[in-house]
Every structure is written in C-alpha cells, then in structure tokens.
Image (spheres, rainbow, N blue to C red):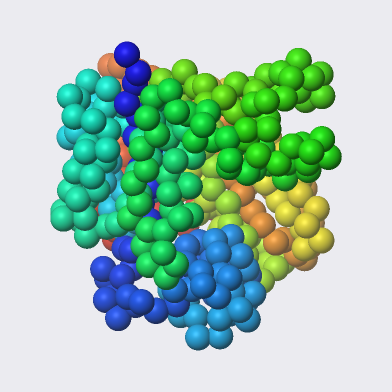
Length: 388
C-alpha cells in the first residue's frame, strides 16, 4: 500500500508572524532582516515585496534599491522559534511521525489515517490558520521527494502578491508523470553546476533525466548519477525521521563593521560560547572538540580546533578553549569580519553520581538554572559576571 506523506511549508513565515504583531504591515512591501548599513540581508520578505524582485538571502541594500518603499523589520528569532514550536505541536496531534526539517517546514507520515491525503491536508491547513492565524502550503505524495517538490510547484503557481495557501496532491503511480515537465533544477541534488552539466547534454527537464541512460549518468556523475536517475523517476523510500542526531552546535556573527578591538572581539567570543553551551544543554549533549572560525575583511576564512580532555556542555570551558585558539591566530589591531564558535564530537551528556559535589557539577547546575530563567523571562533577565 502506498504511503501518504505530507510536506508542510509555512508561507513567508517570518513575515506572517510580523503581520500578526503589526497588522499595518499587511499588504505592504516589507522585509525581515538586517539593516542595509550593517551588511544586513533579507531573511524573509512579503509577497508584495517579491513583486519588485526582492527575495531571501539578498543584501538588504540591494532590496531597497529594487523597492525604495521597502519597510525593513528586524529579525526576532525567539518569537519565530516559539511560534514554530506551536505549529509542530499541532502537527504532532495529527500523527507522531513528524520530521521537522527547518523552522518553517516539516514532513508528516499520515499513512495510518483513513482519509485521503488531500482531505487531511485541507483540514491541517485550516487548523493551523484557525489556531495560529498562519498561512501554509502542503504537498502530498507517496514519498518525501515528490511531496516536497509538489509544495514548491504549487506555490510557484499561486497568484502573485498574496500568500499561496496552496495544496497539491500527486496520486500514487503518477510521480514520474508529475515530475516529467518540471525543470531539471527542481529536482533535489541538481544545483547550478549539475544543471549546467545536464544542459550541455541537452537535458533541461526532469523527464529528460528519467529518459537518459542511468549507466551513462553514473559514468558522468558517479554515484550521484544513480541518485539522479532514481529521483527523476520519483523514487524515494526514505522514512519520516522523528529525531535527528546532532553532529555539531555552533554560533557565528558577521559584524556590521569590521572589528579590530580585542576587548570587543573577546566579549563577542564569550557571548558565542554561552550560546553554544546553552544549545548543547537544551539538546542534552556534550562535545569534545571546540572550533574557532575567523574571517578577515578580504573574506579569507580560517578555522582552528582543539580537543578537550572530556566532553563538555559548559560555557566557561567552551569559552576558554575558543579563547586560547583566538589568541593563537589573532594579532593586536587586526580587523575581523566574522567570528564563530562551534563544538563537535557530540554525545549524550552523562550525569556522574558522586558523594560530594564537584565544582564542575555546581557550575553546571547554575547554568541549567540560568537557562530556565532565560527561557521563561528572556535572555536579558540575568547575566553572568565578566570572565577574566
């Protein structure tokens, strides 16, 4: 029996949340992102702004040139994260088989539900709109690959200037026929380089990929060629995965202006380490390798890493290791464009039971308490004293 897989995509998620906060933004060309004079980029933009050619990941300065009347709204990650959790909770009421793939996207396996996937999608779309006031689009198919492409295609056909709120169902057995006329670039795994290589062969649609010799694709593209052939036929047996094993945790910042002040750089390093530690504790993991990332004004990027004696999820230990790496590579007065801290080699955090508390255990309990306070009252409710 064919599976029933849904792919849900919240339409212009950041913008939809901002419109709830400020209804005056509805119908206006606006973008959520950084300020144009601070190297800001567009994180999301309203559909009214898209009519001017504005799109996500575009430098905000360019977006303003395309649309001088563009309203710039600062990003509020904490609010978006909380709303996203509410959406995922609604999905989990429908089925426990939910795979969140980003803050505004998820797959659902609804094979066990008796209704047809189109009806389930319409009911889910209405429920999210009624409870949270958020628009979403949904693709439905027998597998994740086709469901995702169905969502993207349905949104591309929607009327310009408004939220798509699209639903597209690809019936079992029609996967290859649905994909056939779509451009090759719509297929997972076909980026600009692969698309250019396929175009040289006269391949411009997914159907042309499916009709091409799989052996020849494998000869030209290696193992990726086999994947292309299989996907072009609409084949995908990957399950909906409810949990992902984290491999790393990191935070980085691109400064609005290049920074050469050592105190400010170390203060930023301190903040990044705190953020990474907090994420590790939230996910119940610890890491053994601390990594530093630096980018100079000429865009040259370097990374350095060090391995700790034992895994950690504690801010101070992460900061100390990152600071040691920083002091090895930075010279007084040299400007920095980007600074980042990461931890890899993650494993579940182990709780050691001992007769007496160690300083490390007391520090961790304090950090967990601070995490809970910040989660409830906001990041600014309490701050640790300055480390020296």
